[in-house]
Length: 350
Image 1 (cartoon, rainbow, N blue to C red):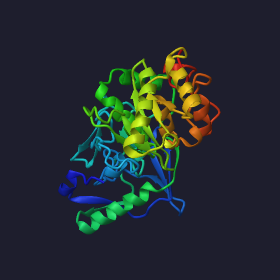
Image 2: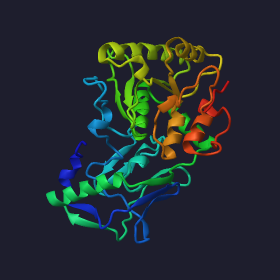
Image 3: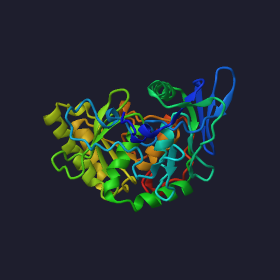
């Protein structure tokens, strides 16, 4: 993990008197920490010296299956640079105009101090309970601080950080539609990492690598990634075939061990050639290319899920273009609270 530069200027560090055994996440309130004696409270921002809400570790932006992959070295967790550090408050500072409600930072805060208000605005809880104490910053205190953060990461979480709705996704997608191209791959990479994967993204300007990214899931599934925000997703399906060939020849990844994935902003319309190509690839090569939208990835993240393509979970094609039921099974819900065909997130718009 990158050591945050500001740590050298810290005078004091936050230390918990006790580590909670569970953390409950809900929209409208900071995360609720539960303790074994029955107590519960909201823990304010700990001012992590390695703020997970802002930075990934070097291990998270690499994939062990492709040693030497020329990945982009950016470790910024916010794909649109909406979070900076407030030195005076020793806490993250949110730019609401840039924030697109993806929920990456919320999912990574070890105590749930980052949360969404009832109106969907990203907030930071700075109020400290009696469970937290401030100690003079020295090597010993810093070691305790880091050890507690590692333990907090493993504390089980329940709940939904942001409630999906048509209006929410319309606001999010309005920002996504206007984003510059250089943010697209970063959004795909960062969402996959937040969903439990390791993901290495191609460096901007690197024409030799060709594929947008590669990912490795918690259970070891590996695959190439193409990110497509435009309307013509046919290029993405063709690009995936090239990626599969390149990973086989350069890194020895067999085509049937490649859980290739296309991340699109909106599912292609039913009459687009993308769906036919995906089905043809399955029939001819026995390869099932996964397809998922940015909105669907966000929905999984808000609901505390991981991205795991076992049993080709995210495979859809010309005969079935519906993500809704796939996500319902994963989230364990009867339906997803966004209307049919909204923005092409769960099913094609046409």
